[in-house]
Length: 343
Ligand code: NAD
Ligand code: ZN
Ligand code: ZN
Image 1 (tube, protein in one colour):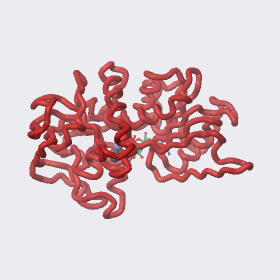
Image 2 (cartoon, protein in one colour):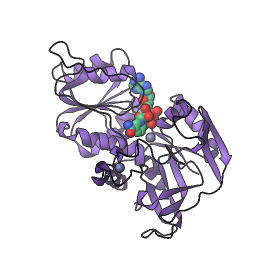
Image 3 (cartoon, protein in one colour):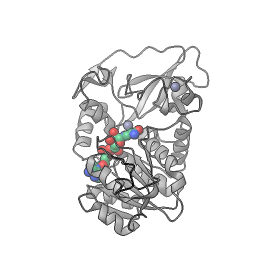
Image 4 (cartoon, protein in one colour):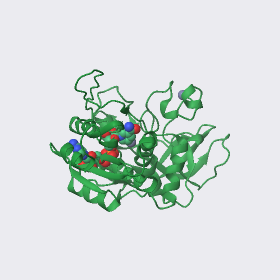
């Protein structure tokens, strides 16, 4: 079968590889769609040895069941499914509570991150990773599994602060950010302030229901402040879906006392926290989180929002052999919404 693999750092190749073997508890999925996540670019840029190579990328996956393992029940050939990409140990205290994204045994990883992913004609996943998608279009289901799930989880963590009439700042209206705006519209009554460097992204934010848009740059924090008011007040929650130094600085300088600061993007910025009686880099009582992906239960809820038409990825389609081009465009900021590859 054809697959798009990271064969070495900075190297993405279309290769021919055997169809993977199906273990007794596995399902072979004929891949329908795979979202191209900015994290894949971080994987490609990571030093040698940080991630396994060669590895088929793709961690936002949907498809149809092609073959089921001997011990698998509840799934039959042809059925459509979305993949929950995290494979926790299932036994630690976090996994037992359903928080596989906090597994204490298998560190940050999953399908397309620490084992072969979905950028291929077929992928093997444990049957326990499949969720039913009902009537949802499979091209939509794929981006919901990460670009939808990750901001949904972050919003869940911040929900006690997202009271009607409050403010939420979404920094970075890309794959994750454009879903974050829709989740806030569908599940809260806050005013949404979208921040991005790109005018196209800000246009998309407005179409999706953002109440204010702010162009990223040196004046962005001041502009947000004119909307949310001066410290110690501010934004009730900030979702930084970029995580580079300028966005982390904007995020910490607009969050309200007692607000939620969600560092979702993995851009490598630094946040310094300095408990002291003096000038504080982050206000008192702020919750700072580095959320990772989400839980299986949350994915089911995200798929339900999709089925109801309340959450829809703005999709640009690519064929499997066009995957390198899709990632190049993502790197250059030329993708708005989500690029979805349809093997
Ligand atoms: P994306 O490329 O689709 O979107 C990024 C957006 O940020 C674009 O609209 C871009 O214009 C904007 N942007 C870039 N620099 C900016 C700046 N300085 N100020 C404001 N906006 C800026 O990326 P994505 O797929 O949405 O991923 C976003 C980040 O989230 C990546 O770092 C990715 O690795 C990370 N991520 C984290 C998790 C997690 O579990 N924590 C999950 C998925 C992705
Ligand atoms: Zn991702
Ligand atoms: Zn575990």
